[in-house]
Amino acid sequence: MSAFSEKYGRWALVTGAAMGLGAEFARQLAREGLNLALLDIQEELLTLTSQALSHEFHVEVRPVVLDLAMPNFLPGLIASTCDLEIGFLVNNAGISAIGHFLDVPLEKHLSILAVNARAPLILAHHFGRLMRERKRGGIIFVSSMSALTGTSYVSEYSATKAHDLALGEALWQELRSSNVDVLTTIVGATDTPGWRAENPSIGVKTWPPVMSPEDTVRETLAALGKTPSFVPGSQNRLATFLTTRLLSRKSAVTTVGKEMDMRYGT
Ligand SMILES: NC(=O)c1ccc[n+]([C@@H]2O[C@H](COP(=O)([O-])OP(=O)(O)OC[C@H]3O[C@@H](n4cnc5c(N)ncnc54)[C@H](OP(=O)(O)O)[C@@H]3O)[C@@H](O)[C@H]2O)c1
Image (cartoon, rainbow, N blue to C red; front, side):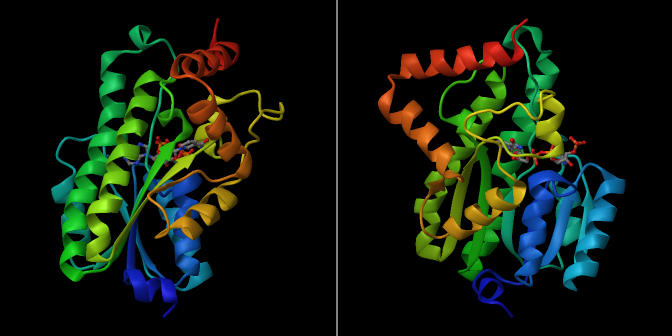
């Protein structure tokens, strides 16, 4: 048993685990010896990821195919995992839409709200209670640098990520006396399938630079238990300092807005 699994328990639940950051969280947790319940909407890819991880790290992996946008997803998840002691939760699944707020269909905004904010809230409430009872556990919320400044073209996405940041930080404070570590990771651009789909100009140099999923996840896991929230990547931390400490709120929103205009404006 690794120190990690001794501290948090034998099973981790990772959402959005078929690919991208979720798959990388799963990989690094498996390397620590944790068994995995991996949740995703993409059945085939989830099966492949699950098989690969169980083969490489000799841990038990249970794929759970579920759509977190569905209003009543929790009973299905409980049915699939009630025999497992989930000691670690990574609230990773997230979706976005690029466009002016009024031009994106309302249904899409509501799905973003459901997957990025409602689902992490429900999962933290359900599994957090069980962790508090056991007096051990860990929860990670995957937020985004767009949570720090209202971000045009991804307005609802940035709002949901601000929700996750505030919720995660509050839970860090509330649950620490129950020996449950909560961390919100404020992720910058990271090279995942989701990021690539929204950034066709791959290869163009940007600042802060795009990170690898390996580094983003490794730095996040290293910060667990030490702080309520954390920005992986030194350049991302510098950008965060500029937008949240040096610039006025108005300048920060405008500066980020101009950058988004250059990227996505017509
Ligand atoms: N990559 C970045 O630059 C970046 C930056 C800041 C924050 N983040 C955050 O990091 C997290 C992971 O991002 P990523 O880039 O790794 O994403 P990704 O490459 O798109 O992978 C996300 C996975 O979650 C699945 N998923 C989406 N909606 C779901 C639902 N309703 N129920 C279950 N699974 C669902 C996706 O399936 P589909 O492909 O079918 O949607 C996909 O398999 C997200 O919360 C994102 O907001 C990422």
